[in-house]
Image (cartoon, rainbow, N blue to C red):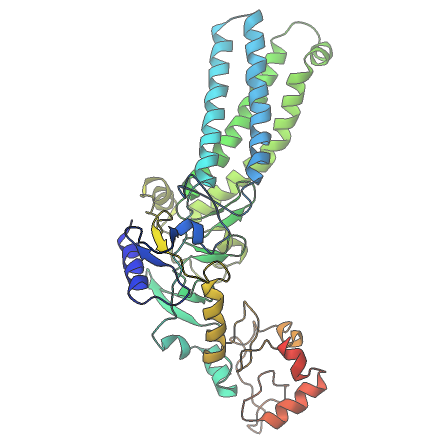
Length: 421
C-alpha cells in the first residue's frame, strides 16, 4: 500500500467520527470487515476485493459475446478447413486467430477488473479556510452581492507553469487532483479520469487506461484479421464467386460482421490515438477544455506517446482488503451524506453541480437552478453612465434583506414549505 494511503489511514484512525470506518492492521474483537465490504462507491468486488469492477460490470457478458462469438467461430471454421486440407498456411492462420482472441480478452478483463485509480475519500472537511475565501472574479462578484451564498470552491495549482483550477468534491470531501473527476455512475473520484466505458463496465482512469488502449487496438486488429482471412478462405476455393459464397455462408457472415464492427472499434482507436498525441482525456476533449487555452500537460507528440507507453502504472491508492472497524450505523447511511448535510448548513454552500442551497441548507427552487450561471465570471458588474448599478434582476438576495427576499419569493410562487421539500 502506498505512503499516501498509509497517511490517510492513520488520520482516520487517530480521529474517527461516529460513522467512519476505522483502519486496523489486524482484526479486533469488535465488528470488523474488509474495506471493500463497506465501500460507499457503486463498485462490485470479486475474490475478496482483489478484483474491482464498476456498477455495470454485467455488460462484460455482452461485450465478451460480441468479441468471442465471431472470433471463436472463425477459429472453428479454420479447424474444419484443416481437416480437409492441412497446410502450413491454415495452421498459421489458426494460431494467429487464437493468439489475438486471447490477447483481446486478457486486455478486456485487465481493463474492467482493475482499480482505475480511485481516490480515497476523506473522513473530515478541510481544516484550511482558504476554500471559503477564494480570490477569483466570480467569488468577489458573489461576495459583494451576499456573503451567504458560495460558488463551487476551487483552488489554483501550478502545473508546468500554468495555473489549473481544482474543484472540491462534496461526496468524497476532498480537492480533486488535476485531471481527476467524479464518476456519477461508480460514485468515485478517479485519477486522470478519461470516461466511464459501458462496454467494459468500468471507469477508465490513470491505472487502466493503457490496458484500455491495448483492448480497443487488439479488437481492431482482430476484426481486420478475421475479415481479411475470411476473404482469403473464399478466394482460395474453386468456382464462381456467387457459388462459393452460397456454399460458405459462415465466411460471408464473418466478413459482414467484421466490416461493421471495425468502424466502431477502429474509429474509437483512432480517436484515442489522437487524444494520446495531444495528451488529453476524453473528458477534457468533450468539455472543450483546451480549445481557447494551452494544454499544460502536453509535451509534444513523441513525448506524449512515451509517457503512456514507458511510464510506470501508478500504485493503487486504496487497499480494499484492509480491515476496518464497522460502526453501528455504517450500513444504514453513507457517512459522506451526513457530513455533506452539516457542511451545507454550516458553511452556507452554493454548489453549482449538486444544486443551490440557501443559508439554512435548504434547496433553492428549481427556477433558480435552471438559470445559466456560466456568465458570472465573464460578465462582472456593469454600471450605467451615471455610475449606478445595472438594473438587471438580482438572483442572489442578501440575508439581511428578509423583507425583500419574502416579496421576491412570493412573486415567483414559492413558499417556505415548498423550499423545505
